[in-house]
Image 1 (cartoon, rainbow, N blue to C red):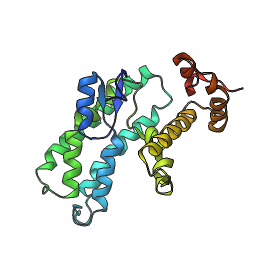
Image 2: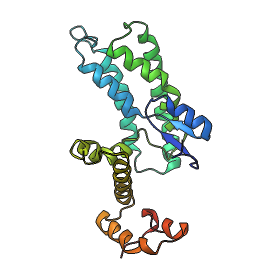
Image 3: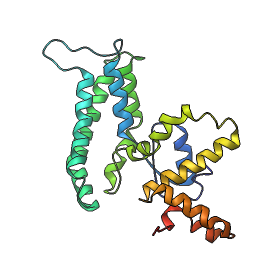
Image 4: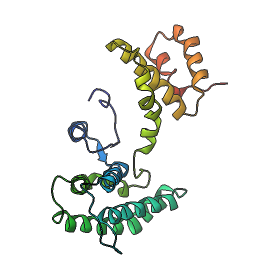
Length: 223
């Protein structure tokens, strides 16, 4: 709540229920992430006890679900270099019919699959998140998933077990601040090492809020 206190716009995230409260109270638009929905079906496909095995010569339900999702991603790949207006038009004309067909398939098959299994959980998750998952089709500037954000934090997620020196709250907060600066510098196409040097060279003179804000990655131009 504190992090998004003055933020205006769109929050794209997974199905964690806490985001609904944040979006409602901060008047934010929430959209879902198809990577998370797809992951549920991939897990179902790998689960021996929950996978609906197809008869010889037929396709399993997990394969059908994944094929719908792959169609959506294929559409996005084909329109990646289009303008926002062109992407919106393509999504409304091509993606929305695929989504509608997929939803009908999910609703039809949900009742046929036992509760508690991985496939049923994947279907329930997707249907519960449906209003958010289709949100990207309402605009041309949004993404089908938040993979960019996940990729940005992946190095931290992989390495955190090696960084156990942050054994206090203050240490963890300090490291989080450093990682945030470095990853934000990368996101703004600034060399992280050069950016940190720039901060250290100038932060001693930053005695006002305006001077501190001038040191944020999107306000810095390195020579």
